[in-house]
Image (tube, rainbow, N blue to C red; front, top):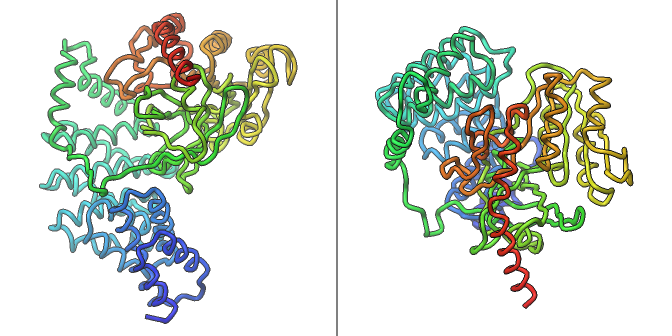
Length: 549
């Protein structure tokens, strides 16, 4: 071990977050590392990953992510070491090591395929290797497909389940144009067959992978019909059988109970602080928050939301996400004081922490399949919620218009951020104090006269979303709206957020929050939103009285 590497290794043994941060900064600046030094540094950096798994510090998570990326930058020289570590550690540690291994690229997968046979009888190692494979994409991973297919028939059901999980991830994260049709057919057949497996974990991963193929749009019409029929039967919605849906839910819940583990109270459980980094006033009673939530930030997608509780005695309320920073582990939220809990939130200060934040919840926003012009429309605090989807549309090559509406200039928010995500942004105010005088529908009409619009997303007050949907209906322009129904648990179990879409009952938290605006029963939605007005007024009065005292 060279002197400079030995000095760094000693620093890592201090078990201090500050020391680890300093070490990572030093390693980033080191040049001309020998193969031996890279190996020695990798051994030290993996200790950060293991340390993170036994820490409840969100800062430690960020350091672990940095360590993971730094190991990957050492390249092929550390592949044999990483591979042996992956096959000899627990699943959570293997996840970080596997991501580093994957970032090295093709040399890593070539080595993995070469060494795979050594672990055919080592089930824990095989599960970790399958997990590592799931981080790759086509075409570099195509050589591993026969191994995935073979693993899906393994005697150990956990190996089978991980193989199915890997199939779905590989197809979901791959470029559609580079996916071999024969490969898709092969994996489809394997997953569809596994829907009838005796173990629920295998069935669950098979269904999840089929769903990812469906969402990716790579299934043939016959395959899509088979999946739809199977899913309709599983959920008790097919017309051939008169299923008792409640019974099905209870049976599935019973099958999964054995997978629960006691909540750790000894400092070894995962915990996020949900600390407020910044708080900025956007307009009267409306604030932009940047909140620490690293686990959620790593997985959140455009259109999804979170449910927050500011204090122990607070209600849980849903909030849209207007952005995130995966590297820093933060979420960007807009909160407007319209009730008791949202008022409690805007009274919080930088450095305060939410009691809990649950997410990501709901489905990601629907993106257009046809290339063309897209329009995103925000009203009030809904403006922030359209920004992540606008960025997604731009990334896919669409031309994107943004429209923001408010009563007066004072209430226009997040316009600069939206401009960065769109080709053009049109501002409208009711009184003409800023931008065009009028409503968002006036601006939409102007765009419709000059552009061939393929997709519209509207987020804001219900009357606005309804008006947008009615305007696009005669032209059959694909239009989606984000429904702000009353929510309780956010997982679809309580049924409080039920909405009527296409004469069917849907749950906004589970099936949405985005729905086809031409199918939404807006009148029913507005009636349900008024169900607890008296209770909300009483709660707000109590909060005001306590605050004044």
